Structure formats: structure tokens, C-alpha cells
Amino acid sequence: MPADILIAAELRELLPDTPVPAHTVEWLPAEAPTPAGPYVAIVPLLSRRIAEPELDALPQLKVVANCAVGVDNVDLDAANRRGIIVTNTPEVLTEATADLTWALILAVARRLKEGQVLVAEGGWTGWHPTQLLGLELNGSTLGIVGAGRIGQAVARRAAAFAMRILYADVSARPELEAETGARRVSLTQLLEESDVVTLHTPSTAETRGMFDHECFNRMRAGSIFINTARGDLVDEAALLAALDAGKLAGVGLDVFPQEPSVHPALVAHPRVVTLPHIGSATTHTRHAMANLAVRNVRAVLAGEPPLTPVLR
Ligand code: GLV
Image (cartoon, rainbow, N blue to C red; front, side, top):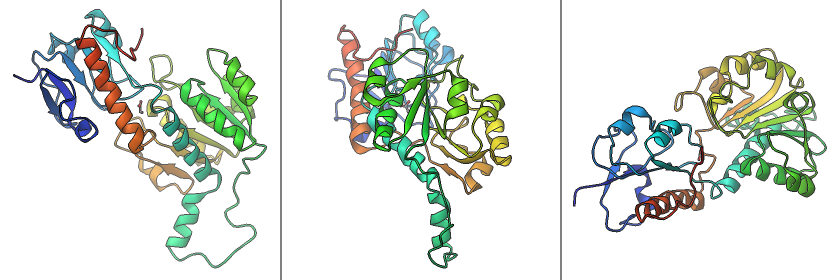
């Protein structure tokens, strides 16, 4: 039977040999363009753009099962116009991504990059009372921009560090507030009062570039900025300017506007930790993501409702 399903080749080792029984898979490497043809389903990585030209070339397509929670690589309106279902992989990656966010908060607050370099380059001459002094998290304020699933999981961890928690979100989260003492405030107040600001909002037409000069200017002097959401939420020139001006004590980034390219000034900066988009990269979570994406395909092709549809 000719292949009728496209699945990212990089997912192969995370999936059973026959991911969608009664269908044949064409394994599509990340560097290959999206082919044209009578495919009924595609499971892309977040690096693959699925928009008008790709959808025009896939006239039989029923489902785009994105192997990511973010769907900014998919033109949802274009899919919607064609009646194509789009699904993502929420829930299964929440805890892993919150852990990685905390890895960055701790690394930046306690200046791990500079410490590692000092030891590795033989510059460490012994214990010193004022060496590499960082931010005491206990009693500091954490500002969470976007309190969806991942933002909330980050907040729950903050309670263990005895941090005061602020969040800015279009919706109030009463359960989160009851559980962690988090308080909903405006973005302006959050920026003005937080020692650590962490981004957890999806990339949409409304949020792209939202973190601009004005936002960085409003942040406290000596605060920390963390982004494990999407690189294009941030105006990179504004971020670099805030770093140059000494406004930020440190920055932790897992995502970038033009991945996999990373601005060399960020890579070289001693107070900036840069990671290769590994928020959900645990063995458990990546298996769960790949399998959830494929279960969505199976459901749609069987005429059942998808498990995790992205609703417009
Ligand atoms: C990763 O960034 C995802 O959206 O799952």
C-alpha cells in the first residue's frame, strides 16, 4: 500500500513499528520539504511550517497532529478553512517543561555558568566570601507571564522555594491562588515587582514581540528573565539592550526567534544561559508526546473525536 501518512522521521524510535494500523507511514526527515500527495495525516515537529502552500499540496489531509504543545508552526485558519483537524500534545509535557524552567531559574540565580567556567579554566583560587554572589530565591518574587498549565506547574514549584508568586494572565486562576498563594496582577505590576520573570504564553499574532523595550525597562534593576516558551515572544534587540545596560542580572533561554540559530552575544554572555529548546526533553515525556500525536491521528482516521484538538 502506498504511504498515506507522514510522520517526522525523528519520532521513529519513540513509536511502535506500525504506529497507525492499516496505514503506511512515510518517515519525513526534518530537513526534507513537506511533499505533495494524497496523504491523510501528518505528524510534524514544531520546526515544520504547515501553512497554505503545504495544505494546498495535501488535498486529502484530515489531520495535522503536531508533536508539540505550541502550534505556532501551523496556520490554524488555513487548516480550519479546509476542515482539517489540528491537534497538539498538551498535559504530557507540562511537568518536564516546568522542571527545565526551574533548572534555568536556579542556574541563572546562582550563576552556574560563570562558576563552571571559573573552575574549568583554572581561575578558581579558593573559597571567597563575595565570589559569584547570586539572588536568594527564598523570599524573592517570581512573576509568571501566562498561567496556563506550564505556568501553573512552575508556580507550584515556586512554593517550595518560599517565593512570593505573581502572575499575569487573561484568566483568573482561583485554584492556583488557593494552592500556592499566587496573586493575579497586571503585566506592568508584575514587571515592576518581580525578581524573576518567566514567560509561559503561546506565540500568537497578539503575543509575538510582546516583550519589548518597554517591558524590559519596567523590570526591576538586577532582575532575572527566563523564557522556555517561544523565542519570538521577545524582541531580541530589546533583550540585548537590557543586558548591555546592566538592567538584568541574568537571563535563561531555551527558545530563540530563529532556531537553531542563536545570537552570538547571548551565547558568549557570562550571565546568559542558552539551551537548545529542551524543555520537554525527558525520555518519558518525549515518548508520551510522540504517542499522543499518533493516537490523535488514529482517532481522526477512525472517525472519532481527536484526544487533544486545538480549538480556534
Ligand atoms: C515545545 O516547545 C512544545 O511546544 O511542545
